[in-house]
Image (cartoon, rainbow, N blue to C red; front, side):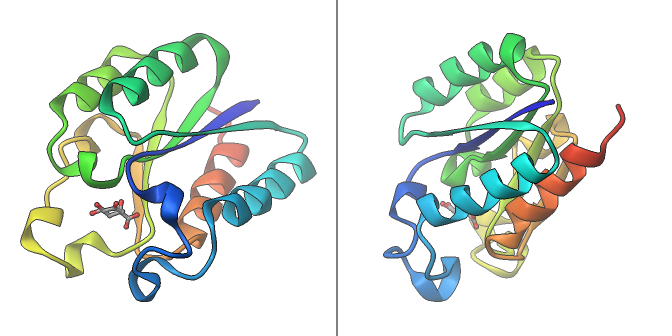
Length: 143
Ligand code: DQA
């Protein structure tokens, strides 16, 4: 089992960025926690972050032959990137959409996700545990 955890724009600033919304932990600290979780389950895990739409699309294409699962926090692209949505639809591996914050309790523009219809499921609102829960699902999914 090989899992890729992908993060989109501004998530490299976790810990500094609006901590009351996104928490105090850095992306590195969250990824360390996920690495331990995956390794304890005997799975391989890799991490990718980019602030660029095209780079995220390239990585999704690459992932289709290298990974069994993708966990994706697409950041604000979630709400309007039809290109990322099409990339997810184009690849056969399951993608789990995650958000640290409860996007439905925030600004109106965050209520809509254009990627949800092509993702396997969505986990939002549990802070860094959103990733932990998504990873737990991927690790225990028997397909
Ligand atoms: C986010 C929610 C998005 O609306 C926002 O643009 C982000 C982070 C989250 O993890 O809560 O960058 O995806």
